[in-house]
Length: 174
Image 1 (tube, rainbow, N blue to C red):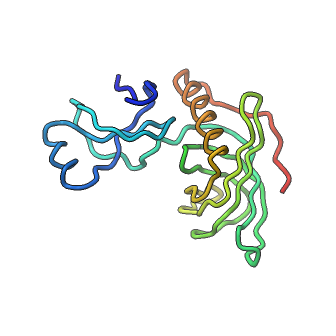
Image 2 (spheres, rainbow, N blue to C red):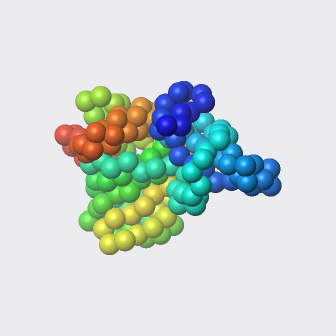
């Protein structure tokens, strides 16, 4: 199994090729990879050839409460929901609140027994499918990014055992 050249973890994923050099290197089976935990991008020999991944970061299944509100006060959108999948640069949320593509939200994920709370200063709604929305994180403080990486490590460990990570926390009040 391929490991991150920085942190040594096995939770890596093929990354999109950048520039002509990386495209040329792929002809001799050297591809870019990105660690899902420490965010390190590196090149490595990879014998299996397949298409580029849809996402650069794998979304991990979870069930975490989340509260959100619009960054723009004129939008006046507030609500709560459940994070159903999470990566270090985005998440999927289920909510009864109707949200539209392009809306920028502030997110607050409460602490879990093993992780600190996570606050995302800005996340844009990239997709809407019924009551599920896909978000891309635009702004997150370094400390919250570190907490998110720690939570991703916990989620990755649970995913490896095929057990979903479920929080017993309540929806935070904003």
